[in-house]
Length: 569
Image (cartoon, rainbow, N blue to C red; front, side, top):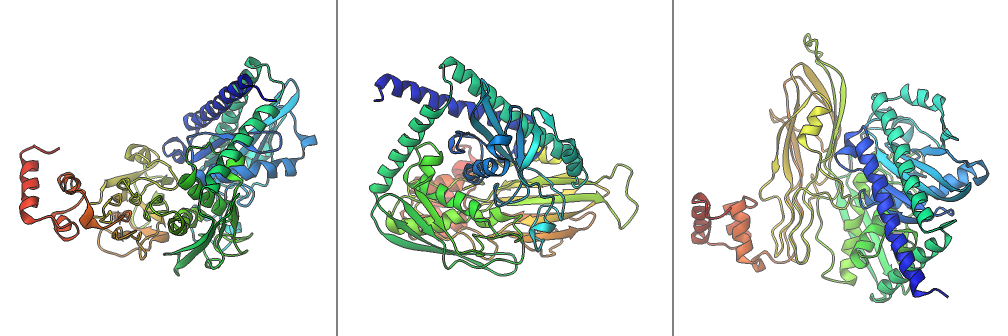
């Protein structure tokens, strides 16, 4: 029978494991070559027991990575075989269906041995800027065009790196030094986790993690089931429409609360798209589980047991359950809308908990720069690939405004201008919040942002647009108004598409306005002091204050006068 002392010790060890994987993640941030990892935190890290069950994840990272990676280690065990696992091994893949959803994510798994015995695994994932093929974008017609595929295999055996693999990778990508550097960074961060684990096991005189694992998983399972049991046992449907590539995409989900689980069934969702916005089920599952977990049990640590009661079903070859060889490079676009669809249903089961719709998918773009071809290029002109992560506004919450230019549900950080411009001959001419883009409501949607991008003198470029919400902005909830849509055009007014590779000639810039989150509740019920603060900060215009919130001309002038006098900051 478990004593109180053992429970306290196990809790201490649980907390230590969380700190171990956080150090693992931070090691990756510090050593990675790609700006998507160093600046945006597009990564995940975790520790697993010998059965491949995730025990703890790093706080740093994304739900899509870590929740997909929760299933990945079991694939590694099956493919490699326990009898072929040795100290010093490191395993690798970017398999979209056994990893985290597309070829641009590399997952590394390292077995952890203590006194010659396998005691667990460390795993980490990072988004890399280039994996060859057509480049990062939705233009491919199959996964074969999207880049180099690395099956589950050994990156290193008994400490010896597979140099043949390294040469193959180098020969197939545009930024070989960057990618190989990232691969070594991934392997190193797992090694850091392993070292800290062994230090912990030595300190607590552990020969294995079996009892600690059972403590973590049993307590997480019980706590999650208690949360589920407290919910109404009923079903509700949610649906939404997003831009897609050439045709709109319908996401439909039925959420059913049972006594001991919650099932999300995506029957009725659109079929496969011809372009690379399809989403493997593992990534759909990652974000559907995340949506429900943050709605009902955000305080319970994320691990195998706390995720297990959330079951996901989707017909094969729908856009949320794409099978090989469907193109999946931009699977995050559909995956990042999954929480809003699930929230739409859950709000009918437990009202007043989940937010209104937000920007959803990240507002990413990749710039492929090269010396201009319409005239002689200067000697300094060069080729370069620059990927930048950006965000629209998140949806208003029942009691709080949405967050401005903040990635939800992915949680990655926006890349600083300085880091983006350092990565290649690109210039960010403008980056600022977009007034009036957050939907009006009792609580206001988060603002989107303006961006204007161009190339240094002597360069032309292709821009890979990875946006949505152009024709289908975030919808308001319970009387709130919609957020502003995405717009994109060249600075001479030439219209551009929200998705796909598009040429930008020398001297031209691309002007983008990213979407705002939707509002929640009747705008007329918003606190007048908050309206005046929004007006003073420039979050809303005088026209919006009057039209959407009912502020009088006298009240608006009073705010404007106070701002001009420096009385409101």
